[in-house]
Image 1 (spheres, rainbow, N blue to C red):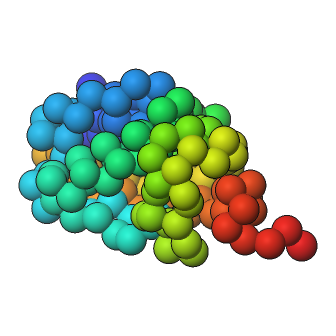
Image 2: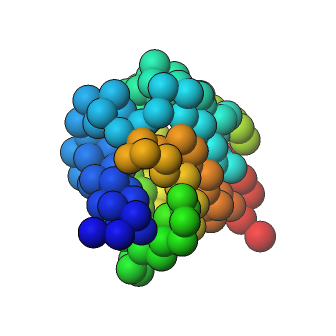
Length: 149
């Protein structure tokens, strides 16, 4: 396999095991670099295994049905892999205060569904950064944290 194919395989595993329907946090230790940066517009940037695991643990507790899936083929060039996705979930869990725009009280029952594009940098089979541009306006509006236009 080429470097790009290898990098795509790492990203497919990350998208499936970390962001997919179920989350296996052991994937963080296996394929994320120790100082990995995870950055999206909806949340504070996260860095390192413990911070990333804590973020996902809290996110999935608040949104137990959280799930993201690819909507297009991955594109790879050099150390970078780009993916388009769609996802969301329903807030039926505890209060969630990780959104930069505000906090949700416990179990609002509100559902968010939104899209995004993510660029991941993979070095020697490990993800060193995941930087995404998501439709945070849609998600925050659906959750009642932003006023609809």
